Image 1 (cartoon, rainbow, N blue to C red):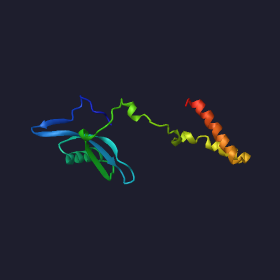
Image 2 (image 1 turned 30 degrees about the vertical axis):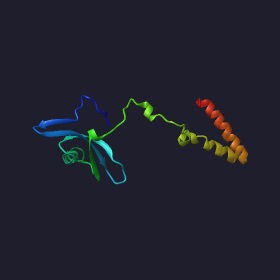
Image 3 (image 1 turned 90 degrees about the vertical axis):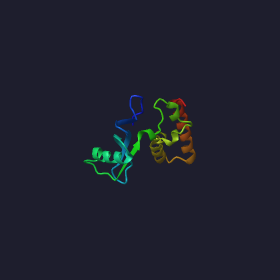
Amino acid sequence: MQEKTRSQPQVAELHAGTRYEVYEIFVQHDALQSHHHVGSVWAASPEWAIQMARENFLRRDHAVSLWAVRRADIHATAGEDRDFFAREFDRTYREVSGYADNAQRWKRFKARAMTLDEVIDDVREGNAHGSAHSGG
């Protein structure tokens, strides 16, 4: 979704006394899927935003749910705020790459019928080599 900028007005008066606002539209195509953003509409009310979204985004598509959210009500982080998304702790053990050596270790274990102590030593050696290569 686009970030708000000063050049994108949030409210416009097209007719005397009628305020139009930007609504972000989210569609759920079936009950097993999540809603996803499909676009924006200018509307005078949430009800009109849903009607306009149905006409603009669902002419050919089937949907089970439609959300219209005033853009002004969306709170988001700034794209430049990289510190906000920085990891506080090393959690590489949760990533797929943390399990990359398991298949090789399992093959060696089956081929040599390693003892439990040998498996532990093999894991320790692998971690020592892995941390030296990854710089951590």
